Image 1 (tube, rainbow, N blue to C red):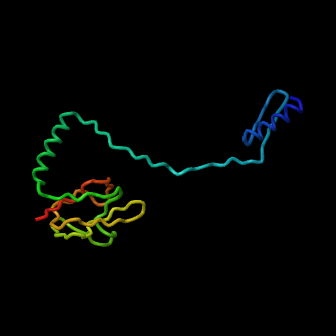
Image 2 (image 1 turned 90 degrees about the vertical axis):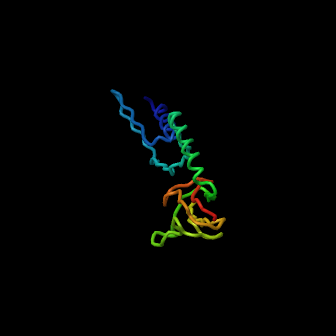
Image 3 (image 1 turned 90 degrees about the horizontal axis):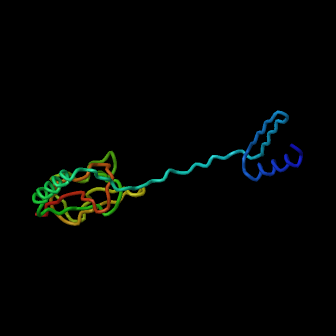
Length: 156
């Protein structure tokens, strides 16, 4: 290797961004190091939302439809309170406080039923009707979707 070839190699290494190149042959050992140290770029993980995939047999789906028909007859006359936002459902305002409501409690319009945390904001979910809580459909600290049923209320 002559001087011009070595100079070209040094220029190539400098332009390529490589921090070190070693070339060894019978007659020559060449090591080219640049003053640059490699930097590690770390990015935050990306959150990917996907819909659940159900691979259940048709027989199961037919049974689920029958169960839904039976439960809808039982739930006739009840009002369903749904989540207005996507987030995490909490039954109490903080871990050391009691639940907002329990099954059997009477509620009035404007009563706080739960909180849904979305993007570090805790949103109070208020009742739009008066009545008695018949069923709580979501477990505490569970994720909820927009328009997901949360409570069943008997308005009578």
